[in-house]
Length: 357
Image 1 (cartoon, rainbow, N blue to C red):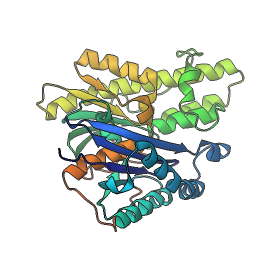
Image 2: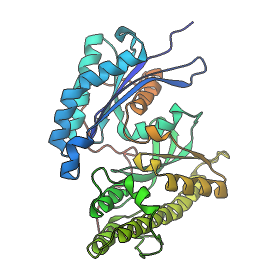
Image 3: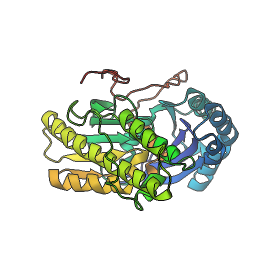
Image 4: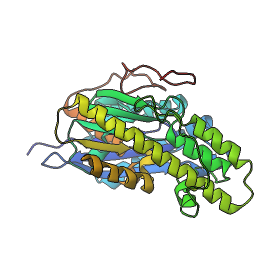
């Protein structure tokens, strides 16, 4: 019986130090043998956000231990690892460099192939870890750093259909949480606050709601929350603002996703339409439920990674590594860290204010 590939994944793009070992069964379905994630919440919460230098220092201190834990928990021996897959971007360059240097050194010392992985591609393929996901599919990537719709044709084959022209939706969640006095990381707490509030209390703006195709904008929404937050005097008003913000984001994503569905169908003739939602914000249950209902209306199959694989993790990096390994798509050991590394490198750069849509 032919040996199944064993891949070590390493992730250090921001404030999680993570390592994972995955393989596959006889049917080619991925199996997670271990997935260790060490968060830096306690380090950064007093600053209200991630401090790159502190994050990098923590990665340096932990990465060897976290990798050893992942290998030990998997039950495999180090010399049976077939390749090391490591996040090379996008992310904070001082953080990326730690994981990248560690992964390259390990690959070189073991004499194994090194595979540089796009962090966004990790999110894009993360549902493959728990579902029989086949290409093509429509991807909504929603996280603290990215918000975009992509048509996914194959591994490495991405066409961007829409993107935020300013801030990511996850950033808007984090900023709103900070304005409401919720300690870092506060974004996930907005949904909890929203349950106690009146979603119709504040009429918040929905920028480029009626134009721009499936492009999105959240900067104006953040500004509106800032202005209202200065007038808040009670806890109930905080809950009401959180509920109004949550509702507004849902309405924006509903409208823009519906447009993205049509654009995806225009360029794909596959009659089995699949919709993948990935990234940290995909863990928001209200957003998940709203998008699942929309998929039922529009006859798309909704596919989400498990909640524990929505945030940054190394299992998704190993998943990309597994697919690249089988295609013999290896990287050179001088592959650079890329702070900016779009999935669709041919797409126009839309970031910034004043863009005409």
